[in-house]
Length: 391
Image 1: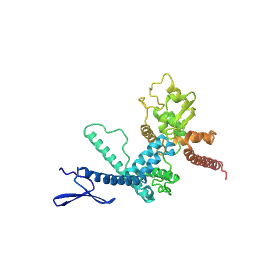
Image 2 (image 1 turned 45 degrees about the vertical axis):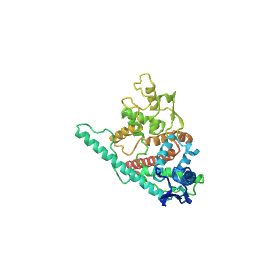
Image 3 (image 1 turned 90 degrees about the vertical axis):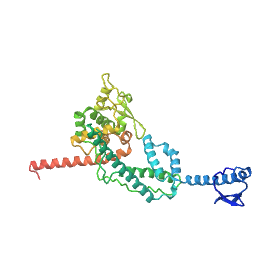
């Protein structure tokens, strides 16, 4: 008879024949009559095997029910998850998948703040390694192109590795964990949030890149910037929207004096009345003589639609040429908030257009700008007094 390999069996040779025993910690040691393949053997062996395998499966299921992976699954099925904007869910999915790869089998009740810090450090280290690999690949590609007599890539090279490389990515990973475990606390799955109250790795010492544009900078960009730069600045200034939302604005969304905007981050519909240069931009793009076939309002010189990344690169290059290294597209949102505020718009109106957190940040810049105006006025008054010999 052919010998069959079966699970959890031990065999002993007695009097020229094998005796079979079922051995597993979950059941008592049991002798199996007959030989594998015989009916009497199977009648005893099959129930024992089914019992052990059932217990193993149940144990695994019990362990998984308390795992981080199971908590992530519950969070993704929750009403709170459904309320997140599409882009936010996409970003959260990426970080939650990362969490499951790192510690999916760990019981979520055992995760400590130190454990969260360790994972955050791993994320930062992985980001640094990915940046170094990207730099090495770019250098190798450029060297190969030069050797072959071809031009290198026109795309902006990866930024060099610094002490802060990966800090933003690691902080965002931690913030997603804080949201996950905050939900778990609210729904009584755990008693405390192990990611709560943790200081960020990347702490800004200034607000470069998010500073509001001055009126002179906006006016200069509109009057002297190339068309693709000018149109983006107009959309950012006179709608107050994020760059991705501006890149996705369609001509078909312009109805009369209004532009109906679907905000990419929140998913909200916002109606913005066209004013100033935005009126002229809409008239040009909606006119019969418009040469660009793209349905988007913001297009390149070749008539193709802009991606968020490509416009950001083109704008950054143009701003650097002007010596404006401390501003970016995002600063136009704060300038828009300032314009609305100075025009007498209510808080509710400003919040509906640009969002609550941006408005709060814009108020800080508005206060700083008012302080600058008052300081300039005082300095001008002092200069006049000196000019006329006044004390």
